[in-house]
Amino acid sequence: MVRKTLSRLGTTIIVGVALYGTTAAAQVRPQSASGQLATCAIVSDSVNVALSPIVFQAALTKALGDSISASFPMESKITVVKVAPAANKQPNGVEVTINTSEAKPGKWPITFKSKAGECSGELKITGEK
Image 1 (cartoon, rainbow, N blue to C red):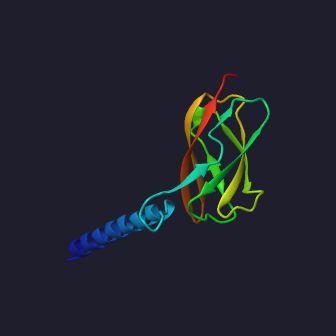
Image 2: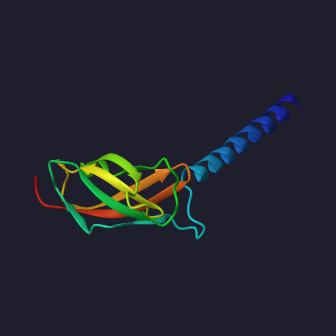
């Protein structure tokens, strides 16, 4: 009897943990109402490798709120210095300052994240160091 009760308790705990993990994972990556990950449009077609920081504008398809971070893959060697609301007050617009002094040329994915969700886009880096 005790063994049967412990077995049921163990099963209940395992199912509960699995359900909680599924719910937590779903909250980490919110999507837009259509089920698709929101995207962003980079105003500049491309930016050059440069010694000084570069500022570019991006328009997000979804409002992400005030506290937004941006990131590139590590292998791109692009460093995000700052993400701020667009200076021209464009709705869902952000102004991103990046350091490309060590960047590798190519098309690189950029991801914007906040508590409200996530958007992705692409930025082309041209030129050599």
